[in-house]
Length: 189
Image (cartoon, rainbow, N blue to C red; front, side, top):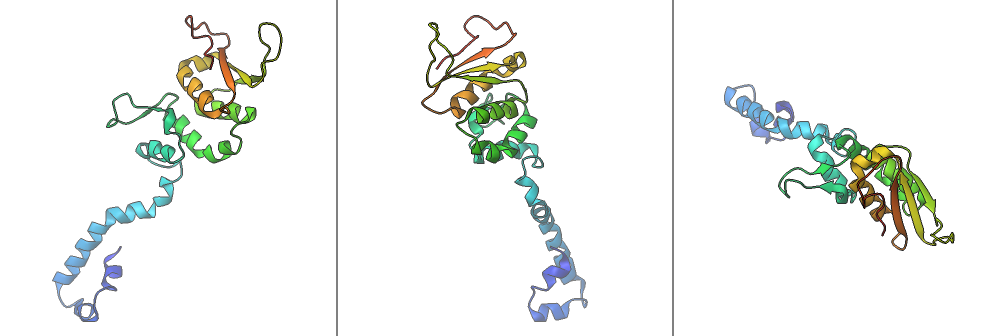
């Protein structure tokens, strides 16, 4: 708030004294200076609620409003800044698209889109009710085929699938083309 704007809130007797002395004008300049940081934040407040423009330190907080903090890691404990396996840019995009992704939650298309946005890696595929060892379809089961690049963020892939698939559905993940260590080729559950 500028000094002349502050002066309008002063009682009439003080406003009448403006211009006759330097003390009141100096106090108004000091008040203007003290308001400047808050004014700067308020002038750009809309950017804090836009995931693509918000300051880096605010992105995890904004993501937590959308219940996306379940995908964050806290390697330094609760006092340290959180880490997102696919990077801050991916968390920004996931936060920005959370409302649209929520519309498709519980569907194969929604899970595919969520995986691609969350990891930044295209090429995921879902097979619904894949056949078991005898060739019979496995009802309420998903087989997610992940591209080799997804091995870099495999824990995030598992967490996304577990959180975004319907609760009554079981799933398994296969990473194509990659050679994961034994026991990591698929996680069933």
